[in-house]
Length: 270
Image (cartoon, rainbow, N blue to C red; front, side):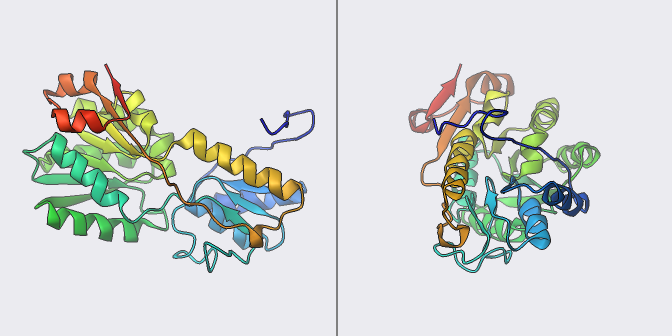
């Protein structure tokens, strides 16, 4: 829609990695003289910012850019960083409440998260607050690599958790097939942060649309190419969220959604 055709009037160079290698990847891209860096996780934007204070950085997906020190202010970044933050203080309570509504018998809930993501501590605090309101006990399940995922969900089963909530971290999104498979093997009803999980066989999801988020990031890139300064471009937060239910998975788990929950769904996968 913006008129860009890769290989014709724009070149896109990809790098992917985790941990300390992110700084090396950012340096590599800067050496190749890219005009804009695009990041898709909290650790990635921190690594990019450590490597440059002049090349524009667009966050396609990020947690809390203010809390992690990436920018001082969302409305006026004042830095070489702008884009989208997917952090929303209400999400933890909403997701946990929907999960409890879907699984009323739940008393103990496993919380699967990537401990390397900068906003994790804040997300855990918000989830704990919501859990107390719902009379739920939380079991933290940190995992930042595929082997740790196996161990974390096996631990959830050993602890006899009644359900699982997965934080909407980039690591979870990339490894969603493994998470969905493991949750199914252990018969764990789970709430996820993106519709792709429910589409892939997860029980339910609530969160912003990833494809729409990347489309918005493209608008930021277009504006910067045309001369806009990242420092003057407010960071956007999601204003619309999708609630997706997978009825096939619910039936396999012996879960019957209430009419009240079904009517709130943006999509029901039969």
